[in-house]
Length: 247
Image 1 (cartoon, rainbow, N blue to C red):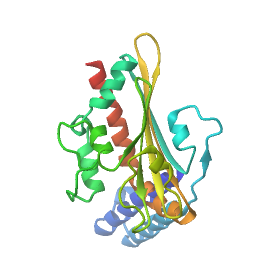
Image 2 (image 1 turned 90 degrees about the vertical axis):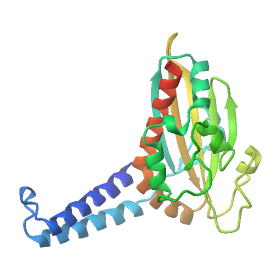
Image 3 (image 1 turned 90 degrees about the horizontal axis):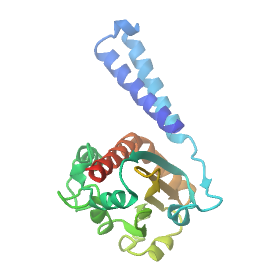
């Protein structure tokens, strides 16, 4: 989170500096335009530092979930949780049924991610009224584990050297076999944990493992830019599941 915070502090500083160049911000005591230039330079420096900060390697000591089995080591991750007033079975069914249109801001944020281009059908360009997980697993993701009313795990290759893959892995074995320099693999789960007789704790975690230092540095620049939008999508996704499960 620290690198993301540094990068976005730098971006905000650059924006304030650009505004100060166009129109002096007197209430911030930024009347002289040269201070705007100084802010732009300082913001750019913060962005560069944030992008260059190393990513720590995390390794799971004792697997406690199917996600741990498929990605025990990773450098990037995010976790989100929500309480749902429904049984594990209903939550599991809702995970399977939620569509892209159920997820608030999904289409806006994914359009930004693909720079407005339509492109082929994928999780970033999902058809209307189709379950989003179905779209994901028939395009670029592979189902790694599906334990009813407990956990769903999917994975995809998010970065690969040119001409190394004929297509996305279609089996868990093929996914495990993706090795070598230049790759980054993303694994995501939905974990369902009974809370009490009337509610369930639903979480989603995304982990990314880069296979070498160069891939890690390259993916870090991408991750630190898209992280806020990615987090917003996942929180909205959990709320969409809660609405459907509680209906």
